[in-house]
Length: 322
Image (cartoon, rainbow, N blue to C red; front, top):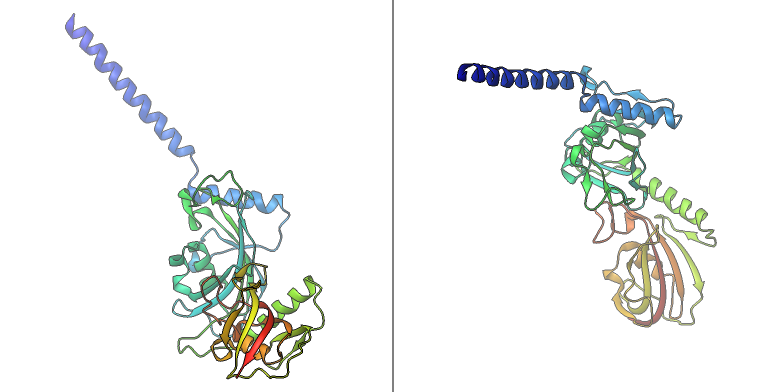
């Protein structure tokens, strides 16, 4: 009797093991890999949005799963991982739950090989090196989730709140425009002045700004209120003034002295664009300036100011001393 019961138990256990094993095998055989899942997700997105002209990346003879469309081909030597690159970008998840589209704030300046280290998708670094390749180029990318932020996503909080975080296994729709880069010898190239001027002119058009004068180095200024003073502002002058500094998306980075709390400033200590513009003013002048990055904080930026940012300043001159 004991033998019979034991036999039944053994047979039952073996049956469970076989049944579980066979079920697992069937499940594994039917499951999609993450690359297959991403490819289906991206192709459904292309179809649903009527996108055309995209090619699938086959760099190195094997596909990365990235789909791309070159908007404007670049020029010059091919980008290497050891080169510095400057670009503006936008991206969003394919489900639309996360969008970052401000090309005034979304600036990058660093080595090509550091893009992923700076918390950008690995797929973006791969695409800049293998597909974009050149400065002054622009493209649109569809980056699969396994080359974006993977199964864990990015950010904190709930992905159900728009722009709060990128959910896991979400592919990205990315736009990137590489403005220019510094070769290994760090000799600056000439792409920034043209880009800065385009940004400023677009800003003026979008905000119906008129009456600005452009100087030889790209500064735009407008005298909003003529001054009554007679002392010229020189590079050696010290002024008191109220002022506001902001990015061209309206974000104020320096507003501590935009009321009655005037600041005392040495002209020699200001960014070149502000120093140049203030020399067009006297006591009582209210002046607006649109300053290209080359005579602002340059390609490195500053605290609260992204790399190669154009700036808007409004100044009211209170006193001038020599």
